[in-house]
Length: 229
Image (spheres, rainbow, N blue to C red):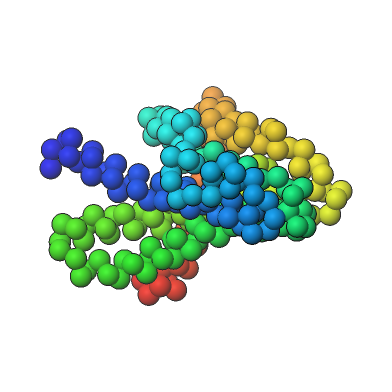
């Protein structure tokens, strides 16, 4: 396979599962918000399976590409946040938890469905089987990674909003105030800590161990539950 076709093949088996994972993750937030009383996402056209409505040019395209170029041990990206007016939810504090959890839950469902569909790959012609096998295997990895990463308890990640909804006020309010800085904290941890660790001769790359173990555990669990274990 020539370099061009090899690159095209590699792109196809990663881009498709990434777009599906991000699109359904974001659409799930908007759908659950709509069911719980807030139609802000619907009005903004975000309760849709159209990936173009959810892609953020920097977070979805440029940032992952930059991490690949610098050979980062951990890939990170994000989509445009779905607009939710929490004050319009039927029960804002409680329903915020359901809206936030909907995205990661959808990713875990997608990972499980992808693992189940892998059983059908052997029924396909050899060339098609290889392509579908790579797509579905990558879908399991991407969706589990996206679910685990988003459940880190730091706003504006979904896990941060779940934590704000569940914690007592004395802990929830200070955590909620971190939302405006959350993305900067994440990017700093991705870039600045490894750079500082390299200067000091210390490994300060926290994301591989913070996320790696839960991701490996969940992939193993899904593989076992779907008959691949």
